[in-house]
Picture 1 (cartoon, rainbow, N blue to C red):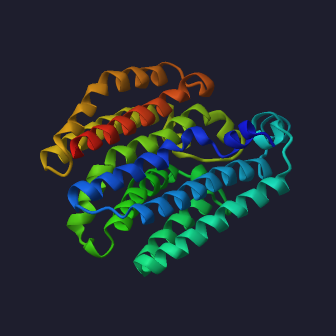
Picture 2: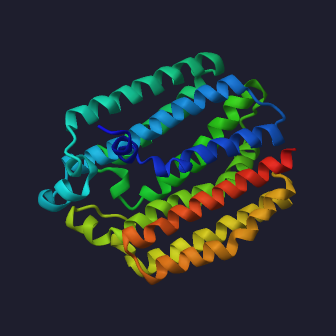
Length: 299
């Protein structure tokens, strides 16, 4: 297996969906709680990144094994069949990534307590149920919620907790702070799956995956995509006004024209190879600018 194929198998291009929420949590810990634990943060980052790769690998593996359209999707579309990869090798690599991530997680639990264990168990459960089991979350109407909540909010929350430890107080106020600051990421990440499901509507129906698009149709799914982008920017404004983030984060509003342009591309045509990247660009640019402007405010 070449490096290029491996990176496609773990969907490396989508890793901004985990890396940037981690960075956001790191910067929020420094700004709002005035504390950072570099070594613990690094270990959490490695564990999170490896598990995220495993989840995406599991997604491809599950879709390959359970594909109904074996002639076209399984052999020509799914990377395992297209690149003639051994399913057993893919499964072995997947298990290896999960074991390493779990061992790092267990070490972090010994340093930070059982609370981290329950947070980790939730993320692991969502990660596995996202692509496996009798009813994978990615193929259900709740897929967008779980992807956005887990990767946008939970990664940011755990990142804050790992960096603050005993200084963190579990209260609705603190959870609300993190939720609001992380809300743009939550919405942009959930929009990534939504855009994917919009473009894959026919393919999903052929493979009996009943996503939210199956129930509300492309028209309302596209409206939801646009509304969530709007709410993301409103959350950025609210967080800055409430002084939960530096004022420099408001500079993220400068990318609104870019987001509008990308949204129009998806509205005009729902073809995965041509317009799904619009959702990826919104997530990448939006989350990156939010994190960079946050970092500038820390200087």
